[in-house]
Length: 126
Image (cartoon, rainbow, N blue to C red):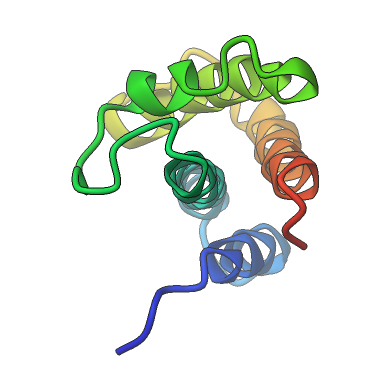
């Protein structure tokens, strides 16, 4: 197997949001999680390619990846985007009862997907 294409998680997120045959909460929670991990892993690989973080450590803490973008000019916004996305991903992956309504869950899923795509663009990747 070759290197995984994290863009596929973006595609999966869009599919989940658009797929009306699945339970709403299930698909939006999953889309938020996949969008976050797509952006997180793209950011991690980018930071490793710049030697901002170790290439030997596969299991970096999420904060380590975010911190690699601190004081990096225009890329500093990635710190805020990843932090916001991770907070929402944590809620969707771990909370039995969400603090936001199911109605707003769709909006949040679309927002997190947009933010993931924004990170990809900033890093010069699709």
